[in-house]
Image 1 (cartoon, rainbow, N blue to C red):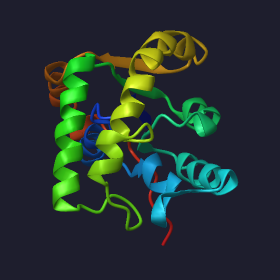
Image 2 (image 1 turned 30 degrees about the vertical axis):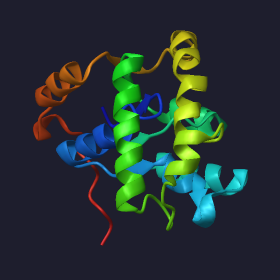
Image 3 (image 1 turned 180 degrees about the horizontal axis):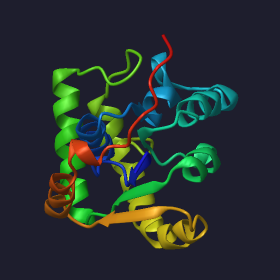
Length: 184
């Protein structure tokens, strides 16, 4: 495992798992949401977003999280391992709801000065909860076919947080890839 992509539905814990994996294996971590959401919740121009993914995934080893189809050809082609958080909808929904409410009250900064707004996320069609309902089951149905299109990937499909914890516990720093020395 040298180039690891973590995917899953909104709120499944992609970034949390990717950060943990990155720290455990001593690999750089990249978060597609941070590259996509510019200040003021503006979407990054396509070329800029793809450029960031291209540069990051051009490294010899990394952990990246995100489901963005507009850069799938870069991340999925270059990854050697795909970790799919395929958790049940009720679990993901309640995690997402708790996270959204917490972030709304604490005004936690997410990326580039952006903060979640409870009214938007809880009550509108553009909010994160509506996005969950539009995408969770669709992605779950489509994922096996998408994965089949990238036969070089080692797929780790995790169906519960307990399974993810066991998988993470099985990884040791000694299992991390040896990186080439950095030039002086």
